[in-house]
Image 1 (tube, rainbow, N blue to C red):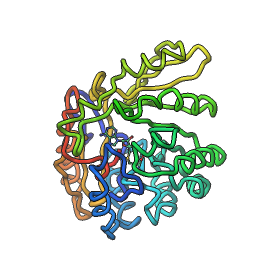
Image 2: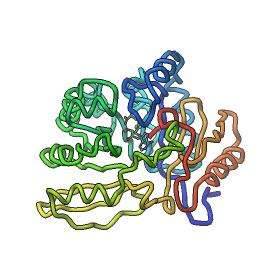
Image 3: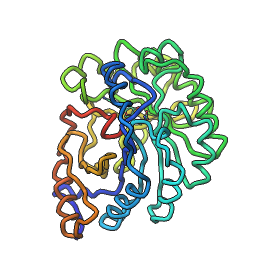
Image 4: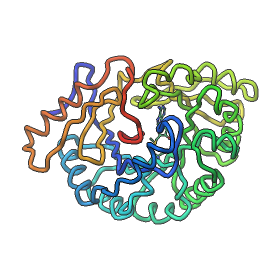
Length: 317
Ligand code: SAM
C-alpha cells in the first residue's frame, strides 16, 4: 500500500544523518563551542551495516529514488566509503552527499569510485573573516580545494550558502563569482527557525527579495521554471549562468515535498517542523513499517515550515 497523503505527497528522497558530530561550529547549528564539544564527546556511531539494513527496509516499502547522506558532518563518519559501496547494491538510483567540504579533498575520488553521484557543499563565505564569523573555524581554502577535487573527480557539485542578515550578506557576490568561474550550481538559503534560532531567526532573515536585490547590483537575470519537488527557485543571468534560492520563509515549498529523514539513532521524521522521532525497529512487520511511515507522512506541513527546537546538526540538513 503506497504511503501518501491528501496532497498526493510520497516519500522518494531519504536524507540520512550519519552522525551528530561536526568539525565546524556554524552559527545556525550551534549556540557556541560548549554545545559542539559536548556533542563531539559522544563516541558512539551507528554501524554501516545497521544503516544499510534500515535504508533497505525503507527502500523496500517506498521504492526510493534518492538517498542523500548528511549529518553532522558525513565526511567524519568512519565507514563512509563502505557505506556508499553498500548503497550502490540496494538499487536506489541516486546516491548523493551534503558536506561542509572540509575533508573533501582526499575523499572526493574514493567516494566517486564507491558510487557517489553528486555532492552539495555548504559554503557560506569565500572571505576568511566572513567564513570565521559563520563557522567559528579558519580554513576556507581547504573547502575550496575540496570543491576543486570533487570537480576533478567528476562529481557534479552544488554550493549551498545560508545567508544571515548582518553576518554574511556581503559574500553573495563573491560566492556567485566563485561558482560561475567553475560553472557549478549555487543556491542561497534563507535562514530557518531551527534549534536555538527557533524563536529568533527573524532578526537574521535575509529574504529571497533581498538576495535578488543584492545580485542585481552586479548581474541582470530572469526567472526560470522550477522542477517538481525542487527546494529552490532558479534564475539565469544574461551570461547564461544560473543560481537558485531556497526561500523557506518567503516562498515555502511544502506542497510537493517528497523527503523523509532518518537520524543516526534509527528514528524517522517526515518533516523538519516535527521534532517527534518515530523509532524504526529491524523486527517491524511490513504493516508496522507502513504505519510508522504514514505517521511520518502525517507530520508534513500543508503550507510552510513552522519552526523546530531540533538543530539540523541532529536531524541532518
Ligand atoms: N555538515 C554538513 C554540511 O555542512 O553540509 C551537513 C549537515 S549541515 C546541518 C547541512 C546544512 O544545513 C548547513 O550547511 C546549512 O546549509 C543547513 N542549515 C542548518 N541549519 C540551518 C538553518 N537554521 N537554516 C537554514 N539552513 C540551515
